[in-house]
Image (cartoon, rainbow, N blue to C red; front, side, top):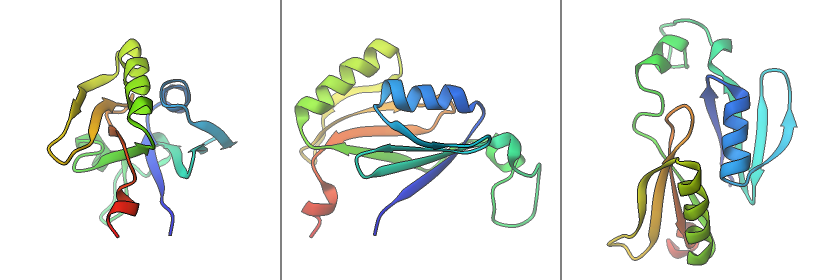
Amino acid sequence: MRLRMELFVDDLDASIAFYTRTLGFEVIRRGDDYVSLRRGSVVLGLGPVAKLPARGSGPGFTRERLAADRGAGVEIVLEVDQLSQVTALHEHCADQGVVVEALQLRPWGLHDFRVADPDGYYVRITHGDAAASAG
C-alpha cells in the first residue's frame, strides 16, 4: 500500500513553490486545476479550494467546511532517512521563515521539527522509517 495525500489550497502557485523550493518536492504533473508532486515515495496532490462546491450536506469537502479550520486534526509527517537530512532541511526551512516548532529530540527517540505551509497545513519532518520499525 502507498499513500497519496490531496490538499485543497488557496493559491496553487504559492503551494507549489512551498513544496518544491522549501521541501524539495518535484512537480510530476500539472493541469489547470490540479498538481501532483513527488519526493521519494511521497505523492501530494494539490487542488484549488475555489473549485470545491460552496456548501453541501454530505461528507465531502466544501469551501464552507474548509474555511473553518483547514487541516485541523491532521499532522502530515514526512520522514527522511538520516538525522543529517532533518538538520539540513531544518536550516533551510528556518531560512525561509516557515518553522513553527524548532528541531528537537522527542521522548520517542527521534528528532523532528514542524512547519506550516501557506494554507496552514501542519507538517512534521523527522528521520527514520516508522513503517519499518512498527513491524
